[in-house]
Amino acid sequence: SQQGEEDPQALSIQEGENATMNCSYKTSINNLQWYRQNSGRGLVHLILIRSNEREKHSGRLRVTLDTSKKSSSLLITASRAADTASYFCATSQGGSEKLVFGKGTKLTVNP
Amino acid sequence: EAEVAQSPRYKITEKSQAVAFWCDPISGHATLYWYRQILGQGPELLVQFQDESVVDDSQLPKDRFSAERLKGVDSTLKIQPAELGDSAMYLCASSVTGVDEQFFGPGTRLTVL
Image (cartoon, rainbow over all chains, first blue to last red; front, side):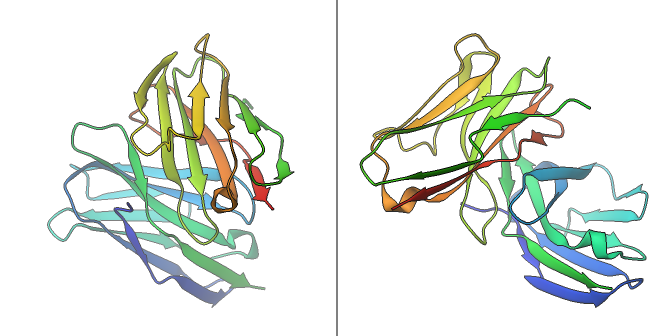
């Protein structure tokens, strides 16, 4: 079963534009993580935000978390063609260490 | 930079055959995970090890899948017999404690004919 649902399923933008992806989840969480996956490759961890945090930054990435709405957003600023990939949110729930992934957003950045 | 190693990268097999995948996590990482990822979906956890012990195998189809991490370091995932529906990417990941970021290997792409 998948906990997170990313929105949109696919996003196509021009280089230099910002990209925003959203994630909604169903149950209370310990933390929420975002991962990137290039086609046919393994996943790369981008950022982890804990349930008591509201916003985190890492380079061109900005993640927000709204636990009252059970949602998170990932913003990539000044996108580059190399940002083309699928982006997944994953949640850790309750007393479990298990990560549950969403279906992902496929981002295409056109040069 | 330390990486999670997996082999083989690609495996083609016929249904009813046995297949095995190998994973070597980052040195010092106590927690090891096996995920299955169907095309167009997110990864789904099959089994999680803490050192040599299984922590969670609730989604592992135990009639045909088995996993072991005998010395608490590298791990093997086996499927016997393989079925057409097992075609997927099998990803291995490791983490220091199990509650922080996970580091993924490149995956093994399995095709069952």
